[in-house]
Amino acid sequence: MTLDGLPFAREVPRISAAQMAEVDRITIEEIGLSVDALMENASHKVATAARAVAGRVDGKRIVALVGRGNNGGDAAGALRHLANWGAEVRAEVAAFPDDVRDTTKRQLIALLQIGPSVVRYASPEIPRGPLPTADLLLDGLLGYSARGAPRGLIADLIHAANGSGTPTLAVDIPSGLDPDSGAKTDVAIRAMVTVTLALPKKGLLASGARETVGELLLADIGIPHVAFARVGIDTRRLFVDGDLVRIRH
Ligand SMILES: NC(=O)c1ccc[n+]([C@@H]2O[C@H](COP(=O)([O-])OP(=O)(O)OC[C@H]3O[C@@H](n4cnc5c(N)ncnc54)[C@H](OP(=O)(O)O)[C@@H]3O)[C@@H](O)[C@H]2O)c1
Image 1: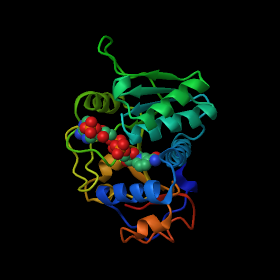
Image 2 (image 1 turned 30 degrees about the horizontal axis):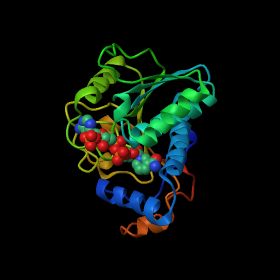
Image 3 (image 1 turned 45 degrees about the vertical axis):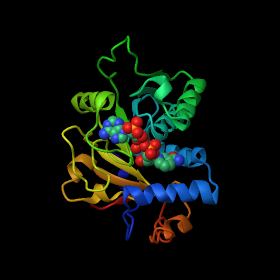
Image 4 (image 1 turned 90 degrees about the vertical axis):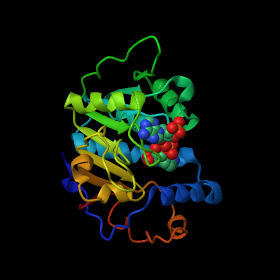
């Protein structure tokens, strides 16, 4: 891991899942930044974090676990950047094609367009089998909209990821960790590093969460200060030392 070059953040506020959803809504609906633009910012930062975790990525095999929502879209977009930087990439999607949200579907289509990536959706006929061998996993299964213990295909992929022994970089929060309380269900990703987006979700900094979260990074995805101010959080000094920072926890 080469996180040593990243600066530590100072005085980092934390945010609840409901507040974060409201900040995203204000940014998209009132300020007018598109969800795709924010996702592109997030994807690039997640890829940069993956490079910090893996060292060089050229020639490395990187597999993303992709959920149906925007958390999955961030991970799929990161794969596109990593492929562009020389990695061999693959997306394991925890949903049938028709169930994937449009924002995330656009990322998966773009990933296939740049080739030679592999995207594997859930299929009723073909069981998924074990995860392919990888140097790094990205966990994009569940983000701040996660509710309760992971179910179904998502739970299966979490078990497979933890059983693989492959280092995992979680996107925003490790899947299976409650974003507000930090309570870990029986099925939760054990991340080596988590890169959280915009602001740390409260649960990441709860006592006892560290063994699930691993090292914690915070990425700026371009959400304006005024959107955070609307929920009473001052972020004006947050990224003065860098736009991908470490958090002591
Ligand atoms: N523009 C951006 O880049 C941007 C903006 C905002 C957020 N984000 C990212 O997207 C994340 C939030 O995205 P999101 O609101 O689309 O949702 P998500 O956290 O990606 O979750 C997606 C879906 O997972 C399902 N789900 C929830 N709990 C589950 C469980 N315990 N087991 C199995 N499935 C479960 C829900 O679907 P059902 O409703 O069908 O149950 C939920 O809608 C953030 O954490 C962040 O990473 C990105």
